[in-house]
Length: 314
Image 1 (cartoon, rainbow, N blue to C red):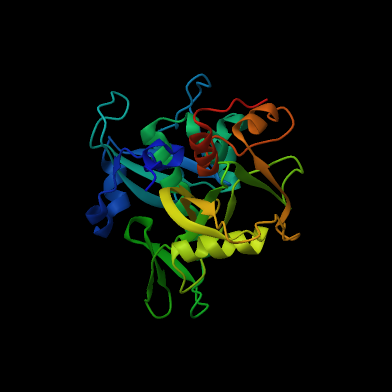
Image 2 (tube, rainbow, N blue to C red; image 1 turned 45 degrees about the vertical axis):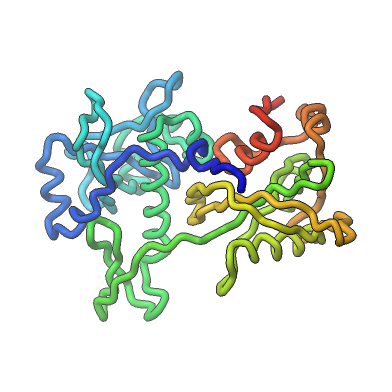
């Protein structure tokens, strides 16, 4: 079994008490607005508001009276760390800004940043909060209406439930499970693919969604064969990372080729347009001509774990 990479993954870091029982309070946000310790992080168009310190990026924590009424609010939990700016026990709320509210906040637009590209530079607490907030906010955006009845829905329980306005049925957040796998051959080379949606010189690991009624390991075997024609054996779990872009949990694996199969690379031509085997020397020698996954991704972590250390982008 490979050692777990989860503790090293940028978006798996977390320093917050989610304080789930507090979500049940019927006047929760009114109570939090009256608590001087409460702080609010702002989301707008899938980005978070960053404080004015680009050397060490961190979330901007707003006081409640600077946040307009009527915005979707989500209770994220309470701070755990000893921090003069955000003492342990401080309640933290996410507010989802619309265009009008974001404009009224009157901040430099460059301070709105995506956790997808910035997440690895945030501290443990801020990375966890940004991903929690973005994940639940994305769920709200796609569940304004019940998929079962078509009725409109209303947020409840601290933003962690939506209720059907007609029949009172509760809906809870869901996460899409997706596998991602580093495949090696008998020479310990790693296969990387170029997706049809990317630049032609960008390469990454193979990934795909888990289908209903399918185990994670079965999904690894199926996705790899569908996209590459390769037969693999012994998928080994190596760690997981939330990826709310918009709503996934990435489950990382390593696997090896089946020595009894022909193992010819056959890009499916739809999702994967190019496939290449890389030795460690090959990868190091080609960093000036290919693009690797960003440092926030689990793909980058699995590649660097195989490589034996950090890879410097060109």
